[in-house]
Amino acid sequence: MSKKPSYTLSDLIAQCDPDAPVPQNMVDWENSAQVGRRCTDEELINKKTLLSGVFGVENAGHSWEALQQAVDRVVKIIEADPNKERVDKIITRWIKRHLSRLGANE
Image (cartoon, rainbow, N blue to C red; front, side):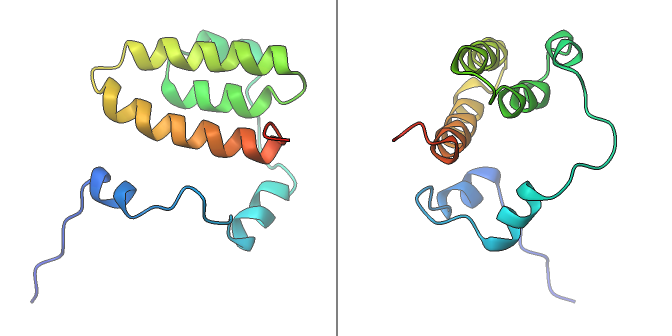
């Protein structure tokens, strides 16, 4: 029996190309109908987790002001994280891609 390879998050991120096109299956997933219960903006704000911050950014697409508030909230969550440097890199890359999809570069 061969030993299973182990990977670190840093190794996997190093293999990523942030400029690569989004695969079609991910586009289809993002454009599919929502299923299940979504948290309200108020519920997300009351949760102080990075994941709730990411969902807040995704839900804030209705205005640039709401998006800025959501990003500011994520920044505060990252600043309090003991793994700040690593988390900051990951989330910054994600936010840049998300903003690009929203047309912020245009």
